[in-house]
Length: 362
Ligand SMILES: Nc1nc2c(ncn2[C@@H]2O[C@H](COP(=O)(O)OP(=O)(O)OP(=O)(O)O)[C@@H](O)[C@H]2O)c(=O)[nH]1
Ligand SMILES: [Mg+2]
Image (cartoon, rainbow, N blue to C red; front, side):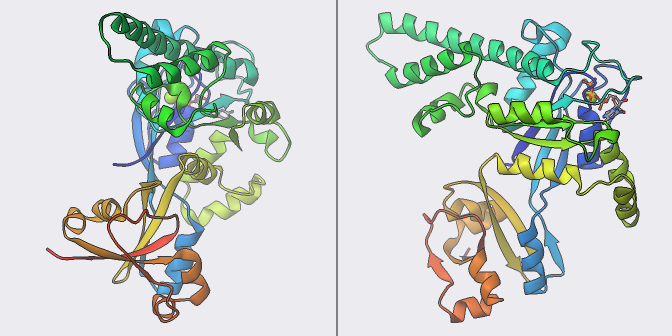
C-alpha cells in the first residue's frame, strides 16, 4: 500500500501544471476550468539526503528512493458540496487520499481566467475550506442522528464515538478543520472510518508569478498558514513545469536565470511526505540500497512484508542499525563490531532511519 497526496484547489489555480512538474507525466493543462475530469495519478520519488549518504558509504550501484503518489483532482468551486461543478465527485476523490496539498492561486496570469475574477488567496482558501467543512458536517450530523435513533432502541452505547463526533461537529461549526484539533489517538482512530477531509493533514502551495520569485509575495498564504498552523510551499508552478521538462543537464542554468534557489517540486514532495508522519527505513541487498515507507508503530515483521511477502511469512529476526550509527561508524561491519547492530524480533516497531537486514526462512 502506498501513501497518497491529493492536489486540490480552485479551477485554474495551477494544480495540473504542478502535477505535471511533479511526475513529469503529461496531463492536459489548459487555460480553461475543468480540463482535469478524472483524477490523474503519478508516482514521485521522495528526495532524501540520507539515501545519498548511505549510497556513498555502502558503495551501492543503485539507490532507490521511496515514493509518494500524487493525485491531481479537478477544481472545486463554491457549492461543490451541493454538486456544483461535479463537486461531490471531486470531494469523494479527496476522501480517498492520505494528505492534501491545497494549491492557491497567487499569480495574475491575465490570459488565464480566475473563476472569481480577482486574485485573492485568502478568499480562495476560505471558499475551498468552507466547502470541505459543509461536506464533512453532513457526514458527521447524519451519523450522530443515526446513533441517537439507535440509542433509543438498543442498549449498546457508542459513547466514545459520539463524543468524538461531537467534538468534530463543534470544531467544524466554528469553521475549524480538525487536522490540528485536540483529539486523542483513540478518537482519531474512530474517525478514520468516516474519511473526513478536514481530519487529513493539509498544507498549502502558494502558486506565484515568476516575477515575484525572490520577493515576499505569497505572504498572504504564508500568514494564513501560520494562523492555521499549517505548512506552506511557495513556488511558481509554470517555471517548475518548464524546469521539470528540461533535460537534467540544462536545469542548473535555467534555475540561475530565474533566480530559483531550489526545486520547488521537491519541497512539495518532501512536505507531502513529512506531514503524513511516516517512517522511512533502508535495506541494502547486494549492490542495491532502497528506502521504504511504513506507518509509525509498524512491527518489523509487517515492514518485512512490504519488501516481500516471503520475508513476512518466513520472518526469523531483523538486524537493525540506526542511520546515525551507520553514518558515524561508516559501515555495516563497523557498526556490528561496535555492537550497535541490534537483533530484534517480530514485534519491534520500525523507527525512522533504521537500516534493516531481515533474516527469513521458507
Ligand atoms: N502565469 C502563470 N500561469 C500559470 C501558473 N501556473 C499555471 N498557470 C497557467 O494556468 C492555466 C491553468 O493551469 P492548470 O494547471 O490547468 O490549472 P488547474 O488548477 O489544474 O485547473 P482545473 O483542472 O481546471 O481545475 C494554464 O494555462 C497554466 O499554464 C503560474 O505559476 N503562472
Ligand atoms: Mg487541472
